[in-house]
Length: 101
Image (cartoon, rainbow, N blue to C red; front, top):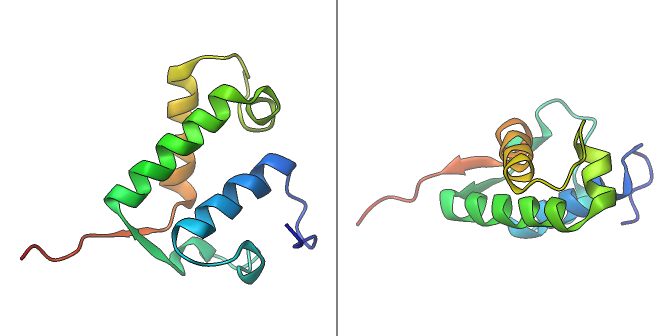
């Protein structure tokens, strides 16, 4: 978590770092100031779903993370799932679908 050129909250850095790990890159190699930075890598639907589940659990179990991400940071499983899905919809890597053999 060396990339200090961004004014990101502690939990956003953790989440983006995990997202980067899922596609084999390092958080510090991504230029988050670049428009459409999230188009630089891609993942499968399975990887996206797994990350979304991880992210929603992270929010649900972490009060500080909920305070950083949610307008109403109550411990509500459905709200955490929805917030994770919204984040991935807006900022998740491009999803590709491997060819069926």
